[in-house]
Image (cartoon, rainbow, N blue to C red):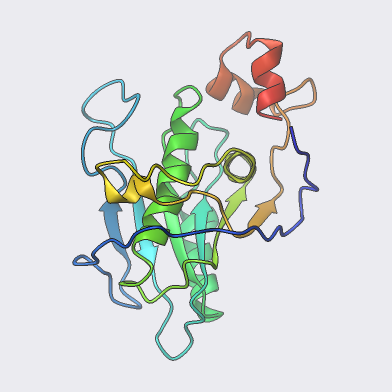
Length: 213
């Protein structure tokens, strides 16, 4: 399994095999929250589960075309949506970067949070044309446990399924860069215990610990 320096910014390649309409494109300066999964949420324990993304597009006069999918922290038990989410998106907007804040699933086991992060990357890339973004400049950013999720998304990805009925699932979930801010970077003995328990349970097998470190 690849290892990464926690503070590194890693540039990766990506490909976009298909486009998705953007009928619900948000206006710059007016954040808009959208459901992450338009149909059934995979691995959902009940119908009330509703992961979302909130899209903060940069002002047109500053927009660079780059975007960061933002994963707030919270130990995989809660989400710090303000200072590790929407506030960060506003700061990125001032630099011309779109910020997409992910409300991913917490207090649920792997791989549900990872599926949400991957879906967020796919969604932004699939809608890049309508949102005036560069599909080759879409990365992921995370804080604390959200940094662990971001690093997991950066080491577990695929090119999309060209045969998928959902056009979003046809698109790659490989991030073009990662920004890991004070991340939980291991699920081993020196991990943050609460994050590990919430994500993997009280006694995870060694293979799963290795997979997510």
